[in-house]
Image (cartoon, rainbow, N blue to C red; front, side, top):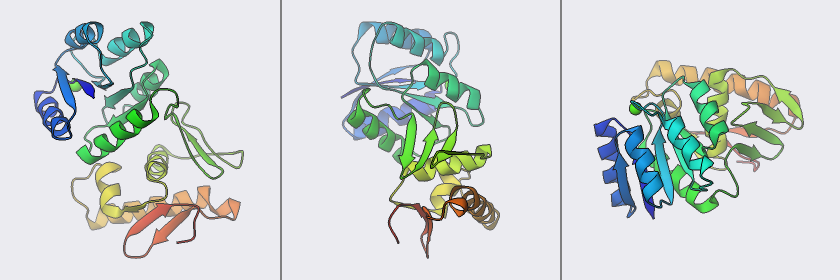
Length: 227
Ligand code: CA
């Protein structure tokens, strides 16, 4: 498995290279958009991890070029927090998935494995559980055909829960991956609980059949089964 990492932040690039090599991926690193452009044109990769914010030719340029040439290589884009437009633009341009910085390395590996498994035939642009559906490009959420109106944070929270559907998600994970707080504390716990309650009101209460479960002593899970 050959992975191309296009990332200008040297520290992040190095961490990605070391982490991926430890997982037995063969890794090439480009530190600029131009370099990424060049490597994509010269070599064959099974997957591309592409930072969107690059000096010179940016990540979107690289992505456009990849898709214009008809390459089906799965592309995972890295975006800055709050750069929702970038994310949408990236997915529209042909990225298969995205990760918001800073991210946990375990999360990146999970995404990479999922992308490799799915290939490009089945894009990860829509997440689904039972009659609940979340569209990553349009950012619309539906349940049983009804449109749900979520805030940006509620959307991110639901997206995270859907990505881990069927598995329990702890408050530590939510604090780290959704709220981007390195450490869980009482304030963040409180925020998480408030948002879970709001989400439940929108996603579950009108529909009779709850999907968002509280798992005592562990956290939460979005699941069809009774816990
Ligand atoms: Ca960057």
